[in-house]
Length: 264
Image 1 (cartoon, rainbow, N blue to C red):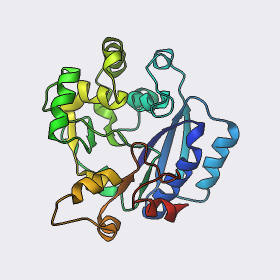
Image 2: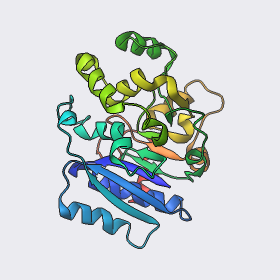
Image 3: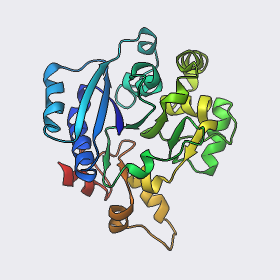
Image 4: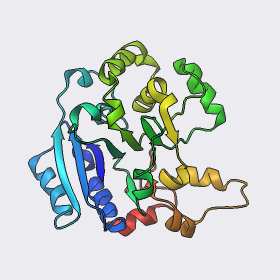
């Protein structure tokens, strides 16, 4: 199974936690983990490698040095330059890889990834979950002048059809879109995939594959079939601490940190 990460020096400890969670919850799978980076110190790479020593994971570091990407809009605290790297995975990864599962490093894996990884793309470019509810679909559609039927996928957990992406001039399309819409971008990488490829996204349940505390609270709001920690432990595959609510911060507010704490 191929896994893709894109990190900088600020997320080395979270990377180690994610990798440990993959090992723990998927012990019988062999992984090739590709880490895209712009700047990582030698000792930071060694820390990551040591966290998977004698495990079922092999790490491949790929340095990204692209002048065009360096000019893309960034918001360092929330949206550093590395958020764009996944968009160009089909260019930088070995041509022998037909698909890869991208994971943000503010995720932890608590059950088997196999069902997600082996899903049929059905000619789509991506498989992922959305957190956008009906009212926001119209907002994003108007903001970016996009068909409202497009899926606004959360890019933190994204199965990528590299074989099909190589048939598309992704780099050229993304660069042109950013130049044209630079001032409209709110969640840059998600906006780009939504606008350019949102009609070729296969949607899966966020409760299973992209569950955060906010999503959990919204689901349980006025619902008879509420979800508790036991349900999450049995059914959810990927916990995603998206937004500013991170379990490693003192002001964390939620209940899903239990899964992060179990790994560290």
